[in-house]
Structures are given as C-alpha cells and as structure tokens.
Length: 144
Image (cartoon, rainbow, N blue to C red; front, side):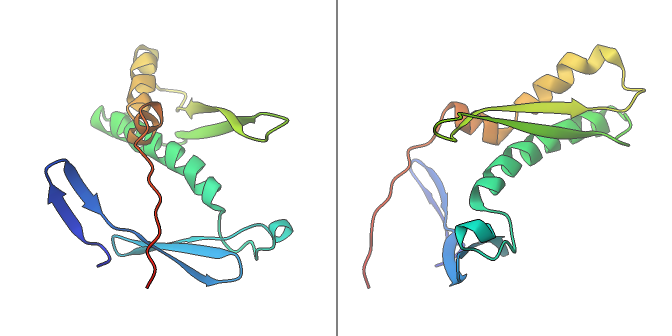
C-alpha cells in the first residue's frame, strides 16, 4: 500500500516505506522517489549517502530556501549568488543539536528595504514551523 493516501476526519495520511538494502544503508520510498541514507565509515557504514540526521538539517535549509527563492523570484530580484548557509551548534557533552543558524546570502544589489521581509519569508518554512509545534510521534510493531 505504498503511497496510499487516506483522507479521514482528522487529515490526510501518506505512507512512506523504509527498507534496508544492505550494511548500514536505510532507504525510504516516498512519492515515487527513493531517498538514500548511509552511515559514516567510522559508524560501520559505507558513506555512500548522507546520514539520516544530515537529511533532517538539509530539510530545514532547503525548506527555508524555497521560501527565499520564491521571495526573490516574485519580486523579480536576482538569484545569482543567493543561498543559505546553515550552521549547527551542538552541546559538547551530549552532542545534541542546540541551535541551527541560517545565514541568507543575497546578491550585492539586493534592496536593503527587503532584508526583514526575506527573513520573515525564510521563517515561514513548514519544517521550521513543525519543529516549533511538533507532531505526535507514535511507534508500534506489526509482525507477519
């Protein structure tokens, strides 16, 4: 039932299939795509793809990126050299992520009057909003 979309009283569900193709690789099949992950060699993997947590960080940056890109395109502003740099700050003891900073890099001719607005656009990122108001995560087992 991969890709099954169900509309119920409380929203829409879309299934993702996660599978294990070998060694430390964990892949996901979703909406016709295969999303590949692997672990670093030091963790027993082959380092052939990003680790799952790397995709988590990338989802924040690419989500904010689509909002920034749309902001620029809707105003006819240059996208040449534009982008976002993400910086992670981790707790030294637990190695847990403490902070993610996003630096929005814009062309030299970007109008200063839009600086706050482009930050607001990036902050509209759906991934960021879900982190601020996280969904319930439920885990269960089926056998057979």
